[in-house]
Length: 539
Image 1 (cartoon, rainbow, N blue to C red):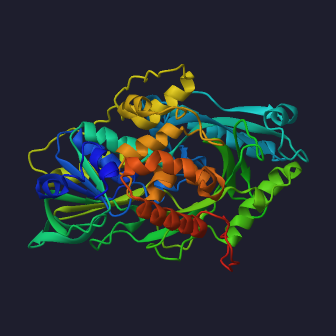
Image 2: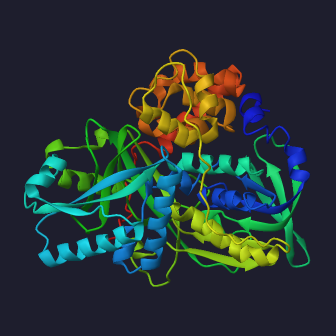
Image 3: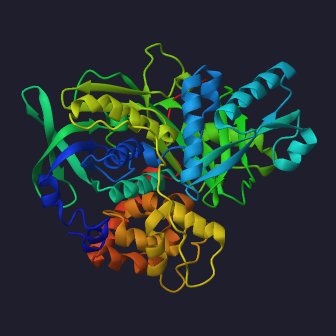
Protein backbone atom coordinates (compact mmCIF):
# COMPACT_ATOMS: atom_id res chain seq x y z
CA UNK A 1 0.00 0.00 0.00
CA UNK A 2 1.19 3.51 -0.85
CA UNK A 3 1.75 4.80 2.65
CA UNK A 4 2.43 8.40 1.66
CA UNK A 5 -0.28 9.01 -0.90
CA UNK A 6 -2.94 6.83 0.68
CA UNK A 7 -2.64 7.70 4.30
CA UNK A 8 -3.33 11.39 4.00
CA UNK A 9 -5.80 11.89 1.15
CA UNK A 10 -8.64 13.63 2.90
CA UNK A 11 -8.50 11.56 6.05
CA UNK A 12 -7.20 8.20 4.83
CA UNK A 13 -10.01 7.11 2.54
CA UNK A 14 -8.05 4.32 0.88
CA UNK A 15 -6.49 3.19 4.17
CA UNK A 16 -10.01 2.41 5.39
CA UNK A 17 -11.28 1.24 2.02
CA UNK A 18 -12.79 -2.11 3.08
CA UNK A 19 -14.85 -0.40 5.78
CA UNK A 20 -15.74 2.47 3.46
CA UNK A 21 -17.06 0.18 0.75
CA UNK A 22 -19.16 -1.89 3.14
CA UNK A 23 -21.26 1.06 4.22
CA UNK A 24 -24.68 1.66 2.72
CA UNK A 25 -24.89 4.88 0.74
CA UNK A 26 -27.69 7.04 -0.51
CA UNK A 27 -25.83 7.80 -3.72
CA UNK A 28 -22.96 6.03 -5.46
CA UNK A 29 -21.45 8.27 -8.16
CA UNK A 30 -19.43 6.56 -10.87
CA UNK A 31 -16.95 8.86 -12.61
CA UNK A 32 -14.38 11.23 -11.14
CA UNK A 33 -14.45 14.02 -13.71
CA UNK A 34 -16.01 17.42 -13.15
CA UNK A 35 -19.59 16.16 -13.66
CA UNK A 36 -19.23 13.40 -11.08
CA UNK A 37 -17.41 15.70 -8.66
CA UNK A 38 -20.17 18.29 -9.01
CA UNK A 39 -22.86 15.70 -8.32
CA UNK A 40 -20.96 14.44 -5.27
CA UNK A 41 -20.71 17.96 -3.90
CA UNK A 42 -24.33 18.91 -4.48
CA UNK A 43 -25.59 15.61 -3.06
CA UNK A 44 -23.45 15.67 0.07
CA UNK A 45 -24.10 19.31 0.92
CA UNK A 46 -27.82 18.51 0.84
CA UNK A 47 -27.65 15.70 3.38
CA UNK A 48 -27.16 12.63 1.21
CA UNK A 49 -24.56 10.02 2.10
CA UNK A 50 -22.51 10.03 -1.09
CA UNK A 51 -19.55 8.03 -2.38
CA UNK A 52 -17.70 8.61 -5.67
CA UNK A 53 -15.48 6.05 -7.38
CA UNK A 54 -13.22 6.63 -10.38
CA UNK A 55 -11.69 3.80 -12.39
CA UNK A 56 -8.52 5.73 -13.20
CA UNK A 57 -7.35 8.95 -11.61
CA UNK A 58 -9.55 11.89 -10.69
CA UNK A 59 -9.95 14.08 -13.80
CA UNK A 60 -8.05 11.49 -15.90
CA UNK A 61 -10.36 11.89 -18.87
CA UNK A 62 -11.89 14.95 -20.48
CA UNK A 63 -11.76 17.00 -17.29
CA UNK A 64 -7.97 17.38 -17.41
CA UNK A 65 -7.81 17.75 -21.19
CA UNK A 66 -10.23 20.58 -21.87
CA UNK A 67 -9.39 23.97 -23.34
CA UNK A 68 -9.14 25.35 -19.77
CA UNK A 69 -11.79 27.96 -20.54
CA UNK A 70 -14.76 28.79 -18.34
CA UNK A 71 -16.96 30.51 -20.86
CA UNK A 72 -20.43 31.00 -22.18
CA UNK A 73 -19.58 29.89 -25.68
CA UNK A 74 -20.04 32.66 -28.18
CA UNK A 75 -20.21 30.23 -31.06
CA UNK A 76 -23.06 28.38 -29.35
CA UNK A 77 -24.94 31.67 -29.22
CA UNK A 78 -24.27 32.19 -32.94
CA UNK A 79 -25.69 28.69 -33.56
CA UNK A 80 -28.89 29.62 -31.72
CA UNK A 81 -28.19 27.82 -28.42
CA UNK A 82 -29.39 30.78 -26.35
CA UNK A 83 -30.45 28.79 -23.28
CA UNK A 84 -27.11 26.97 -23.07
CA UNK A 85 -25.18 30.22 -23.46
CA UNK A 86 -27.24 32.02 -20.81
CA UNK A 87 -26.76 29.17 -18.35
CA UNK A 88 -23.02 28.96 -19.07
CA UNK A 89 -22.49 32.72 -18.65
CA UNK A 90 -24.29 32.69 -15.31
CA UNK A 91 -22.26 29.69 -14.11
CA UNK A 92 -19.09 31.43 -15.25
CA UNK A 93 -20.00 34.41 -13.10
CA UNK A 94 -20.69 32.14 -10.11
CA UNK A 95 -17.28 30.49 -10.47
CA UNK A 96 -15.53 33.84 -10.78
CA UNK A 97 -17.25 34.89 -7.55
CA UNK A 98 -16.76 31.67 -5.58
CA UNK A 99 -13.38 30.42 -6.84
CA UNK A 100 -11.01 33.39 -7.09
CA UNK A 101 -7.48 32.20 -7.78
CA UNK A 102 -8.77 29.07 -9.49
CA UNK A 103 -11.15 30.66 -12.00
CA UNK A 104 -9.84 33.98 -13.26
CA UNK A 105 -11.07 36.54 -15.82
CA UNK A 106 -9.49 36.27 -19.26
CA UNK A 107 -9.79 39.10 -21.75
CA UNK A 108 -10.20 38.07 -25.40
CA UNK A 109 -9.26 40.10 -28.46
CA UNK A 110 -10.84 39.16 -31.79
CA UNK A 111 -9.14 40.75 -34.83
CA UNK A 112 -11.30 41.87 -37.74
CA UNK A 113 -9.76 41.67 -41.20
CA UNK A 114 -12.02 43.73 -43.37
CA UNK A 115 -15.31 42.21 -42.27
CA UNK A 116 -18.39 44.09 -43.36
CA UNK A 117 -19.84 46.64 -41.00
CA UNK A 118 -23.02 44.54 -40.94
CA UNK A 119 -21.11 41.46 -39.76
CA UNK A 120 -19.34 43.59 -37.18
CA UNK A 121 -22.64 44.90 -35.86
CA UNK A 122 -23.99 41.35 -35.68
CA UNK A 123 -21.00 40.26 -33.59
CA UNK A 124 -21.32 43.21 -31.26
CA UNK A 125 -25.05 42.53 -30.89
CA UNK A 126 -24.26 38.94 -29.91
CA UNK A 127 -21.72 40.14 -27.39
CA UNK A 128 -24.28 42.59 -26.02
CA UNK A 129 -26.55 39.64 -25.26
CA UNK A 130 -23.55 37.79 -23.79
CA UNK A 131 -22.90 40.73 -21.46
CA UNK A 132 -26.59 41.04 -20.61
CA UNK A 133 -26.60 37.46 -19.32
CA UNK A 134 -23.62 38.34 -17.11
CA UNK A 135 -24.98 41.67 -15.91
CA UNK A 136 -21.93 43.58 -17.08
CA UNK A 137 -20.61 45.48 -20.09
CA UNK A 138 -17.21 44.23 -21.25
CA UNK A 139 -17.32 44.35 -25.04
CA UNK A 140 -15.94 47.18 -27.09
CA UNK A 141 -14.54 47.89 -30.54
CA UNK A 142 -11.02 49.12 -31.18
CA UNK A 143 -9.74 50.52 -34.45
CA UNK A 144 -6.71 49.04 -36.20
CA UNK A 145 -4.09 51.21 -34.49
CA UNK A 146 -5.53 50.58 -31.01
CA UNK A 147 -5.86 46.87 -31.65
CA UNK A 148 -2.28 46.62 -32.93
CA UNK A 149 -1.06 48.10 -29.65
CA UNK A 150 -3.18 45.61 -27.71
CA UNK A 151 -1.92 42.63 -29.74
CA UNK A 152 1.36 43.73 -31.33
CA UNK A 153 2.24 40.40 -32.97
CA UNK A 154 -0.94 39.89 -34.99
CA UNK A 155 -0.89 40.16 -38.77
CA UNK A 156 -1.36 43.78 -39.86
CA UNK A 157 -2.33 43.31 -43.51
CA UNK A 158 -6.03 44.09 -43.88
CA UNK A 159 -6.56 44.64 -40.14
CA UNK A 160 -9.66 46.79 -39.71
CA UNK A 161 -9.67 46.66 -35.92
CA UNK A 162 -11.01 44.24 -33.40
CA UNK A 163 -13.49 43.37 -30.69
CA UNK A 164 -12.49 42.92 -27.06
CA UNK A 165 -14.56 40.96 -24.54
CA UNK A 166 -14.05 38.96 -21.33
CA UNK A 167 -14.47 35.28 -20.43
CA UNK A 168 -12.56 33.20 -17.87
CA UNK A 169 -9.97 30.43 -17.57
CA UNK A 170 -9.06 27.74 -15.04
CA UNK A 171 -6.93 24.71 -14.34
CA UNK A 172 -9.53 22.05 -15.08
CA UNK A 173 -7.90 19.21 -13.11
CA UNK A 174 -7.54 21.42 -10.04
CA UNK A 175 -11.19 22.44 -10.43
CA UNK A 176 -12.11 18.77 -10.05
CA UNK A 177 -9.85 18.35 -7.00
CA UNK A 178 -11.22 21.51 -5.35
CA UNK A 179 -14.78 20.28 -5.91
CA UNK A 180 -13.99 16.88 -4.40
CA UNK A 181 -12.37 18.58 -1.43
CA UNK A 182 -15.45 20.71 -0.89
CA UNK A 183 -17.63 17.59 -1.04
CA UNK A 184 -15.43 16.00 1.63
CA UNK A 185 -16.19 18.93 3.93
CA UNK A 186 -19.83 17.86 3.70
CA UNK A 187 -19.11 14.23 4.59
CA UNK A 188 -18.69 12.71 1.13
CA UNK A 189 -16.00 10.21 0.15
CA UNK A 190 -14.15 9.73 -3.13
CA UNK A 191 -11.64 7.07 -4.15
CA UNK A 192 -9.66 6.79 -7.38
CA UNK A 193 -8.56 3.61 -9.16
CA UNK A 194 -11.77 1.78 -8.28
CA UNK A 195 -13.47 0.14 -11.24
CA UNK A 196 -17.08 -0.98 -11.59
CA UNK A 197 -17.25 -4.64 -12.59
CA UNK A 198 -21.04 -4.98 -12.61
CA UNK A 199 -24.22 -3.58 -11.15
CA UNK A 200 -26.04 -5.19 -8.23
CA UNK A 201 -29.73 -5.71 -8.85
CA UNK A 202 -32.86 -6.75 -7.02
CA UNK A 203 -35.05 -7.86 -9.89
CA UNK A 204 -34.85 -5.04 -12.41
CA UNK A 205 -33.82 -2.41 -9.85
CA UNK A 206 -30.18 -1.40 -9.44
CA UNK A 207 -29.15 -1.56 -5.78
CA UNK A 208 -25.41 -0.91 -5.98
CA UNK A 209 -22.30 -2.10 -7.75
CA UNK A 210 -19.48 -4.62 -7.60
CA UNK A 211 -16.22 -2.67 -7.35
CA UNK A 212 -12.57 -3.64 -7.63
CA UNK A 213 -9.60 -1.82 -6.14
CA UNK A 214 -7.19 -1.54 -9.07
CA UNK A 215 -4.46 0.16 -7.05
CA UNK A 216 -3.87 -2.67 -4.58
CA UNK A 217 -5.71 -5.57 -6.18
CA UNK A 218 -7.53 -6.06 -2.90
CA UNK A 219 -10.41 -8.00 -4.40
CA UNK A 220 -14.04 -7.24 -5.12
CA UNK A 221 -16.44 -5.24 -2.97
CA UNK A 222 -20.22 -5.15 -3.13
CA UNK A 223 -21.36 -1.61 -2.40
CA UNK A 224 -25.01 -0.95 -1.70
CA UNK A 225 -26.64 2.36 -2.57
CA UNK A 226 -30.20 3.63 -2.85
CA UNK A 227 -29.24 5.17 -6.18
CA UNK A 228 -26.34 4.77 -8.61
CA UNK A 229 -25.43 7.75 -10.80
CA UNK A 230 -23.35 7.05 -13.90
CA UNK A 231 -21.38 10.23 -14.64
CA UNK A 232 -18.71 8.70 -16.83
CA UNK A 233 -18.73 11.42 -19.49
CA UNK A 234 -17.82 9.98 -22.87
CA UNK A 235 -17.76 6.57 -21.15
CA UNK A 236 -21.27 7.00 -19.69
CA UNK A 237 -23.99 4.59 -20.74
CA UNK A 238 -21.82 1.47 -20.65
CA UNK A 239 -23.67 0.28 -17.56
CA UNK A 240 -27.15 0.46 -19.06
CA UNK A 241 -28.83 0.83 -22.43
CA UNK A 242 -31.35 3.39 -23.56
CA UNK A 243 -29.28 6.54 -23.49
CA UNK A 244 -28.58 8.95 -26.32
CA UNK A 245 -26.04 8.17 -28.97
CA UNK A 246 -22.72 9.90 -28.39
CA UNK A 247 -20.35 11.26 -31.00
CA UNK A 248 -16.91 11.35 -29.35
CA UNK A 249 -15.03 14.41 -30.60
CA UNK A 250 -11.34 14.99 -30.04
CA UNK A 251 -9.96 18.41 -29.25
CA UNK A 252 -6.17 18.76 -29.42
CA UNK A 253 -3.99 21.54 -28.05
CA UNK A 254 -0.44 22.88 -28.10
CA UNK A 255 1.62 24.55 -25.39
CA UNK A 256 4.38 26.97 -26.34
CA UNK A 257 6.81 28.99 -24.24
CA UNK A 258 5.35 32.39 -23.40
CA UNK A 259 8.45 34.11 -24.80
CA UNK A 260 7.82 32.57 -28.24
CA UNK A 261 4.18 33.57 -28.32
CA UNK A 262 3.85 36.44 -25.84
CA UNK A 263 0.25 37.46 -25.21
CA UNK A 264 -1.19 39.96 -22.77
CA UNK A 265 -4.66 38.58 -23.46
CA UNK A 266 -6.25 35.78 -25.43
CA UNK A 267 -6.41 36.06 -29.19
CA UNK A 268 -9.44 34.50 -30.84
CA UNK A 269 -9.16 34.04 -34.60
CA UNK A 270 -10.73 32.27 -37.53
CA UNK A 271 -8.68 29.53 -39.17
CA UNK A 272 -7.49 30.65 -42.62
CA UNK A 273 -8.62 27.42 -44.28
CA UNK A 274 -12.04 26.55 -42.90
CA UNK A 275 -13.05 29.54 -40.75
CA UNK A 276 -13.25 27.57 -37.49
CA UNK A 277 -12.47 29.49 -34.30
CA UNK A 278 -8.97 28.97 -32.89
CA UNK A 279 -7.53 30.64 -29.79
CA UNK A 280 -4.27 31.26 -27.99
CA UNK A 281 -4.01 32.56 -24.44
CA UNK A 282 -1.58 32.77 -21.50
CA UNK A 283 -1.96 29.83 -19.12
CA UNK A 284 0.16 28.80 -16.13
CA UNK A 285 3.29 30.53 -17.46
CA UNK A 286 3.02 29.19 -21.02
CA UNK A 287 0.81 29.92 -24.04
CA UNK A 288 -1.99 27.45 -24.76
CA UNK A 289 -3.32 27.04 -28.31
CA UNK A 290 -6.44 25.17 -29.40
CA UNK A 291 -8.47 23.54 -30.48
CA UNK A 292 -9.39 21.01 -33.11
CA UNK A 293 -12.78 19.32 -33.35
CA UNK A 294 -12.56 15.94 -35.09
CA UNK A 295 -14.31 12.61 -34.76
CA UNK A 296 -12.35 10.35 -32.42
CA UNK A 297 -12.17 6.87 -33.90
CA UNK A 298 -9.31 5.38 -31.87
CA UNK A 299 -11.42 3.92 -29.07
CA UNK A 300 -11.68 5.11 -25.49
CA UNK A 301 -9.51 2.63 -23.58
CA UNK A 302 -6.27 4.52 -24.24
CA UNK A 303 -5.37 8.16 -23.80
CA UNK A 304 -6.09 10.36 -26.77
CA UNK A 305 -3.19 12.03 -28.57
CA UNK A 306 -2.81 14.73 -31.18
CA UNK A 307 -2.34 13.60 -34.79
CA UNK A 308 -0.01 15.09 -37.39
CA UNK A 309 -2.87 16.75 -39.34
CA UNK A 310 -4.13 18.38 -36.12
CA UNK A 311 -0.64 19.68 -35.30
CA UNK A 312 -0.26 21.08 -38.81
CA UNK A 313 -3.73 22.63 -38.63
CA UNK A 314 -3.02 24.51 -35.41
CA UNK A 315 0.43 25.62 -36.56
CA UNK A 316 -1.10 26.90 -39.79
CA UNK A 317 -3.48 29.08 -37.79
CA UNK A 318 -0.62 30.46 -35.69
CA UNK A 319 1.58 31.14 -38.69
CA UNK A 320 -1.23 33.04 -40.42
CA UNK A 321 -2.15 35.10 -37.36
CA UNK A 322 1.40 35.78 -36.10
CA UNK A 323 3.51 35.77 -39.29
CA UNK A 324 6.43 37.74 -37.89
CA UNK A 325 7.05 35.17 -35.14
CA UNK A 326 7.73 32.36 -37.66
CA UNK A 327 6.45 29.72 -35.25
CA UNK A 328 7.42 26.10 -35.96
CA UNK A 329 6.71 22.73 -34.40
CA UNK A 330 10.07 22.87 -32.62
CA UNK A 331 8.59 25.70 -30.52
CA UNK A 332 5.96 23.36 -29.06
CA UNK A 333 6.68 22.27 -25.46
CA UNK A 334 3.92 19.69 -25.21
CA UNK A 335 0.61 18.63 -26.70
CA UNK A 336 -2.53 17.08 -25.27
CA UNK A 337 -5.85 15.84 -26.56
CA UNK A 338 -9.20 15.17 -24.92
CA UNK A 339 -12.36 13.44 -26.07
CA UNK A 340 -15.59 15.36 -25.57
CA UNK A 341 -18.90 13.59 -24.86
CA UNK A 342 -21.01 15.32 -27.50
CA UNK A 343 -24.56 14.21 -28.25
CA UNK A 344 -24.90 12.91 -31.80
CA UNK A 345 -27.49 14.85 -33.78
CA UNK A 346 -27.72 12.02 -36.31
CA UNK A 347 -27.50 14.51 -39.16
CA UNK A 348 -23.83 14.13 -39.97
CA UNK A 349 -23.18 17.81 -39.23
CA UNK A 350 -19.63 19.10 -38.90
CA UNK A 351 -18.31 18.52 -35.35
CA UNK A 352 -17.92 22.21 -34.50
CA UNK A 353 -21.60 22.88 -35.22
CA UNK A 354 -22.88 20.34 -32.68
CA UNK A 355 -24.37 21.61 -29.43
CA UNK A 356 -22.90 21.02 -25.98
CA UNK A 357 -26.09 20.26 -24.07
CA UNK A 358 -26.19 17.43 -21.55
CA UNK A 359 -28.57 14.48 -21.48
CA UNK A 360 -29.99 12.52 -18.52
CA UNK A 361 -31.81 9.20 -18.64
CA UNK A 362 -33.23 7.16 -15.80
CA UNK A 363 -33.80 3.54 -14.96
CA UNK A 364 -34.83 1.90 -11.73
CA UNK A 365 -32.10 2.72 -9.24
CA UNK A 366 -29.82 4.14 -11.94
CA UNK A 367 -29.50 7.65 -13.38
CA UNK A 368 -27.03 8.36 -16.19
CA UNK A 369 -25.73 11.68 -17.47
CA UNK A 370 -23.42 12.71 -20.29
CA UNK A 371 -22.61 15.69 -22.47
CA UNK A 372 -22.45 19.25 -21.23
CA UNK A 373 -19.62 21.69 -20.61
CA UNK A 374 -16.98 22.16 -17.95
CA UNK A 375 -18.46 25.57 -17.14
CA UNK A 376 -21.93 24.25 -16.35
CA UNK A 377 -20.97 21.37 -14.06
CA UNK A 378 -23.00 22.72 -11.11
CA UNK A 379 -26.12 23.24 -13.24
CA UNK A 380 -25.75 19.71 -14.61
CA UNK A 381 -25.37 18.30 -11.10
CA UNK A 382 -28.53 20.02 -9.90
CA UNK A 383 -30.42 18.81 -12.97
CA UNK A 384 -29.29 15.23 -12.30
CA UNK A 385 -30.43 15.42 -8.69
CA UNK A 386 -33.83 16.80 -9.75
CA UNK A 387 -34.24 13.76 -11.98
CA UNK A 388 -32.99 11.50 -9.18
CA UNK A 389 -35.20 12.93 -6.43
CA UNK A 390 -38.22 10.63 -7.03
CA UNK A 391 -35.95 7.64 -6.43
CA UNK A 392 -34.80 8.92 -3.03
CA UNK A 393 -37.94 8.81 -0.85
CA UNK A 394 -37.77 11.12 2.14
CA UNK A 395 -35.26 13.47 0.52
CA UNK A 396 -36.96 16.62 -0.68
CA UNK A 397 -34.28 19.28 -1.05
CA UNK A 398 -35.40 22.24 -3.15
CA UNK A 399 -32.07 22.12 -5.05
CA UNK A 400 -31.69 25.86 -5.22
CA UNK A 401 -28.18 26.97 -6.26
CA UNK A 402 -25.90 27.99 -3.41
CA UNK A 403 -22.27 29.17 -3.35
CA UNK A 404 -20.09 26.59 -5.07
CA UNK A 405 -17.29 26.75 -2.50
CA UNK A 406 -17.26 28.08 1.03
CA UNK A 407 -15.01 31.10 1.63
CA UNK A 408 -11.45 30.20 2.62
CA UNK A 409 -8.99 32.28 4.60
CA UNK A 410 -5.86 33.35 2.77
CA UNK A 411 -2.86 31.44 4.16
CA UNK A 412 -0.09 33.18 6.06
CA UNK A 413 3.46 32.44 4.94
CA UNK A 414 6.79 32.40 6.79
CA UNK A 415 8.05 35.05 4.41
CA UNK A 416 6.26 37.73 2.48
CA UNK A 417 4.52 36.28 -0.57
CA UNK A 418 2.79 38.34 -3.29
CA UNK A 419 -0.97 38.63 -2.90
CA UNK A 420 -1.65 37.10 -6.36
CA UNK A 421 0.35 34.01 -5.39
CA UNK A 422 -1.54 33.59 -2.12
CA UNK A 423 -4.79 34.04 -4.04
CA UNK A 424 -3.72 31.32 -6.46
CA UNK A 425 -2.83 28.88 -3.69
CA UNK A 426 -6.14 29.57 -1.93
CA UNK A 427 -8.14 29.04 -5.10
CA UNK A 428 -6.42 25.84 -6.13
CA UNK A 429 -6.12 24.21 -2.70
CA UNK A 430 -8.98 25.71 -0.73
CA UNK A 431 -8.86 24.93 3.01
CA UNK A 432 -5.62 22.96 2.52
CA UNK A 433 -3.66 26.01 1.34
CA UNK A 434 -2.32 26.80 4.82
CA UNK A 435 -1.20 23.22 5.38
CA UNK A 436 0.56 23.28 2.01
CA UNK A 437 2.49 26.43 2.96
CA UNK A 438 3.35 25.00 6.38
CA UNK A 439 4.68 21.79 4.80
CA UNK A 440 7.06 23.63 2.46
CA UNK A 441 10.77 23.17 3.09
CA UNK A 442 13.59 25.57 2.24
CA UNK A 443 13.29 26.92 -1.29
CA UNK A 444 9.96 25.21 -1.97
CA UNK A 445 7.86 28.38 -1.95
CA UNK A 446 9.63 29.35 -5.15
CA UNK A 447 8.32 28.76 -8.67
CA UNK A 448 9.44 25.85 -10.78
CA UNK A 449 11.21 27.67 -13.65
CA UNK A 450 8.95 28.31 -16.61
CA UNK A 451 5.73 27.72 -14.66
CA UNK A 452 3.53 29.32 -12.03
CA UNK A 453 3.74 26.14 -9.90
CA UNK A 454 5.57 26.11 -6.58
CA UNK A 455 7.85 23.25 -5.61
CA UNK A 456 5.74 23.02 -2.45
CA UNK A 457 2.70 22.05 -4.53
CA UNK A 458 4.53 18.90 -5.61
CA UNK A 459 5.27 17.99 -1.99
CA UNK A 460 1.70 18.57 -0.91
CA UNK A 461 0.22 16.62 -3.80
CA UNK A 462 2.51 13.67 -3.05
CA UNK A 463 1.63 13.83 0.63
CA UNK A 464 -2.09 14.46 0.60
CA UNK A 465 -3.79 14.19 -2.80
CA UNK A 466 -4.22 10.48 -3.58
CA UNK A 467 -1.32 10.18 -6.01
CA UNK A 468 -1.03 6.57 -7.19
CA UNK A 469 1.23 7.05 -10.21
CA UNK A 470 3.77 9.60 -11.34
CA UNK A 471 1.50 10.84 -14.13
CA UNK A 472 -1.15 11.65 -11.49
CA UNK A 473 1.39 13.97 -9.88
CA UNK A 474 2.86 15.62 -12.98
CA UNK A 475 -0.12 15.76 -15.34
CA UNK A 476 -3.10 16.39 -13.03
CA UNK A 477 -2.23 17.41 -9.43
CA UNK A 478 0.31 19.76 -10.97
CA UNK A 479 0.57 20.50 -14.71
CA UNK A 480 4.33 20.61 -15.08
CA UNK A 481 4.18 17.64 -17.45
CA UNK A 482 2.48 20.02 -19.89
CA UNK A 483 4.48 23.12 -19.06
CA UNK A 484 8.06 21.80 -19.22
CA UNK A 485 9.89 20.22 -22.14
CA UNK A 486 10.13 16.47 -21.93
CA UNK A 487 7.37 16.45 -19.35
CA UNK A 488 9.74 17.85 -16.72
CA UNK A 489 12.58 15.38 -17.34
CA UNK A 490 15.16 18.10 -16.69
CA UNK A 491 13.86 18.56 -13.13
CA UNK A 492 13.26 14.91 -12.30
CA UNK A 493 16.07 14.65 -9.75
CA UNK A 494 14.60 17.42 -7.62
CA UNK A 495 11.05 16.13 -8.10
CA UNK A 496 12.24 12.76 -6.83
CA UNK A 497 14.04 14.32 -3.86
CA UNK A 498 10.86 16.12 -2.81
CA UNK A 499 8.25 13.46 -3.55
CA UNK A 500 9.66 9.95 -3.22
CA UNK A 501 9.56 9.79 0.56
CA UNK A 502 6.15 11.50 0.68
CA UNK A 503 4.79 8.85 -1.66
CA UNK A 504 6.39 6.01 0.28
CA UNK A 505 7.97 4.53 -2.85
CA UNK A 506 11.24 2.61 -2.70
CA UNK A 507 13.89 3.11 -5.39
CA UNK A 508 12.59 0.29 -7.57
CA UNK A 509 9.05 1.67 -7.50
CA UNK A 510 10.26 5.17 -8.38
CA UNK A 511 12.32 3.91 -11.32
CA UNK A 512 9.35 1.89 -12.55
CA UNK A 513 7.01 4.88 -12.30
CA UNK A 514 9.48 7.22 -13.99
CA UNK A 515 9.98 4.84 -16.90
CA UNK A 516 6.22 4.41 -17.32
CA UNK A 517 5.65 8.17 -17.16
CA UNK A 518 8.37 8.88 -19.72
CA UNK A 519 6.87 6.36 -22.14
CA UNK A 520 3.36 7.72 -21.59
CA UNK A 521 4.47 11.30 -22.15
CA UNK A 522 6.32 10.39 -25.35
CA UNK A 523 3.27 8.59 -26.76
CA UNK A 524 0.54 11.05 -25.83
CA UNK A 525 1.94 14.46 -24.92
CA UNK A 526 4.84 15.05 -27.29
CA UNK A 527 4.84 15.91 -30.99
CA UNK A 528 3.24 13.21 -33.15
CA UNK A 529 5.90 11.10 -34.81
CA UNK A 530 3.94 9.54 -37.65
CA UNK A 531 1.93 10.94 -40.51
CA UNK A 532 -1.80 10.31 -40.64
CA UNK A 533 -4.46 10.57 -43.33
CA UNK A 534 -7.14 11.59 -40.83
CA UNK A 535 -8.81 14.77 -42.09
CA UNK A 536 -9.56 17.88 -40.12
CA UNK A 537 -13.31 18.30 -40.46
CA UNK A 538 -14.31 21.75 -41.69
CA UNK A 539 -16.76 23.86 -39.73
